[in-house]
Image 1 (spheres, helix red, strand yellow):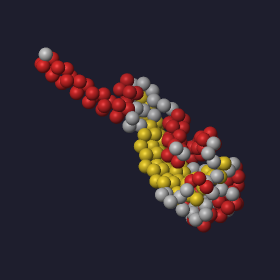
Image 2: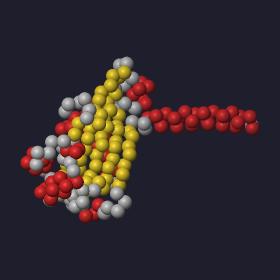
Image 3: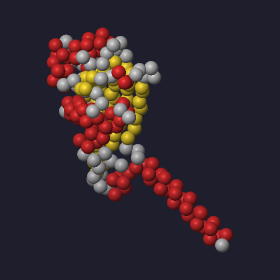
Image 4: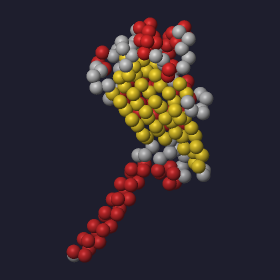
Length: 197
């Protein structure tokens, strides 16, 4: 009787270990780092503007695509009033601001006042790529996004998120992962979830 229970426990431990490792690998499709200013009160934030995302990836349309998806997902959250993207672009063009990631504090404060926004969201697409390995394709997106409050130009929230369209199971069985569009949408949702809980 004692021998049989020992055999069972010896089988259960390795089986649970294998299951834990497999589940861990399956969840490895997303990485993140987030900063939230400890003294900033987000309850006073009513209106935000999303500046068109800069694109550092080799995917030429990634900046515009991510900007559109980000605004749509932000509107769907129904937490903030969002300045119309066309209005944001107009103000930036009037001020001859092309590289939005290089906006100074003074420029952010000025743009915020003109748009009537308490927060400006700036983002960069660091990676947007499809990588073929064997017969499968893995899509990866990395976004760096921050919100700057327009009274002082201070960063009150910042996050870096990476999402991948190929998990452990699709690698194991050679099935197709998520499309680049699906991975982009997942990454944007993860970014917003770190801002809006």
